[in-house]
Amino acid sequence: MKARTLKKDKVNIITMGCSKNLVDSEVLLTQLRGNGINASHESNKDDNNIIIINTCGFIDNAKQESIDTILQYVDAKEQGLVDKVYVTGCLSQRYKDDLEKEIPQVDAFFGTRDLPAILKKFKADYKHELVGERLLTHASHYAYMKISEGCDRPCSFCAIPLMRGGHISRSIEDLVKEAEHKAANGTKELLLIAQDSTYYGLDLYKKRRLADLMRALSDVNGIDWIRLHYAYPTGFPMDVIDVMKERPNICNYLDIPLQHGSTSVLKTMRRGTTREKQEELIHSIRDVMPDIAIRTTLIAGHPGEGEAEYQEMVDFVERMKFERLGVFTYSHEENTHAGSMEDIIPQEEKQARANHLMEIQEQISYDLNQEKIGKTFKVLIDKKEGGHFVGRTEYDSVEVDNEVLIDAAKHYCRVGDFVDVKITDATEFDLYGDVLNS
Image 1 (cartoon, one colour):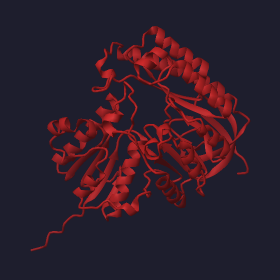
Image 2 (spheres, rainbow, N blue to C red; image 1 turned 180 degrees about the horizontal axis):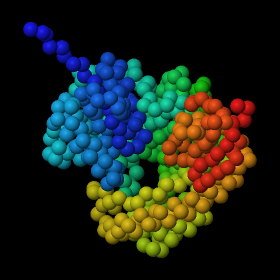
Image 3 (spheres, rainbow, N blue to C red; image 1 turned 120 degrees about the vertical axis):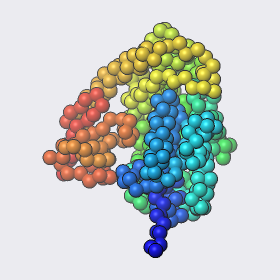
Image 4 (cartoon, one colour; image 1 turned 180 degrees about the vertical axis):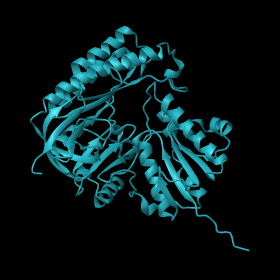
């Protein structure tokens, strides 16, 4: 009789949601592989017998997408196509008890800080020597770097503290070590992310030390660009802008979610600021650093946003002329402060308001992009798509901002390289250009 061969486990990690989740998946991938486990990220192959789904629980659409993905793999398990399904991340952290009752076919649910418990399922150990090392799931020339976890802010609409816990900064030493490892493996751009990057250092060092961190990271050889995301406006440390001005490898770019342009709605949102203070901050930043691209996000349809408050936000966008803008519709989240308020604005009206704000932004973006025609910019090439090489200037972050399109029939570029590009044409969200000296 032939001996039965045991099939070796193959793990596939599926990531839902934001870049912070992607970082968590990359850390998990690194730890699994470091323990000799055959693991991949979003593999297209159908020979994976263990699935780990890293869920998002931020807004209704994201929650539904995560649940649909869980059900898809539970169905695959019931058909015998996979052996085990594990669920981790924000949705699992927030709704673990409910999910265990509703989807009992899942083998185990884990929270956002349960990495050692996940590894235990594979009889694997958390390897401290791998701290700072991370296998990237995308092109290696850029990498997200999570500088802290969790959030201490009381924003009315946000469930992140329920899912991610309180704010915990990573040490400057650990982050520099990670940056050095990334640079040695070809990373040229670091995208600093956190739930609240301006809070960085308060817990560890008893004072805000984001500027010190950025200075230390900018000293790492091989890192050409450092990009700052998710800076909370209240208590924003202006020394960050001084460092940005002082260091050429820190991008003239700031992602600072302002959320609204009406003081009364900002108060309802528990943002700890006013429209006037926000405008004063933006003016102060631009005074110190005129050549900066400011990205912000706004929420349309929050409780308390009547027609007058909405018009205040319209006026705010028209006057501030943000270089980059994203608008979300308000999502009613249970167990948040706003969850106890009446959500009376119909979804169609929320969407109409968001669409109108983005139409205003399209014109602003078009006008700003037209001013770039004839100018030359340093561009990092991200990919080749169709007949174009696609890259970004220092004023643009990955996936959310403008792209520079270079005709592949006229120019050859290598992904991950910097090239100088003269802009020849521009639309609302794309720039077109020719590579100099190619």
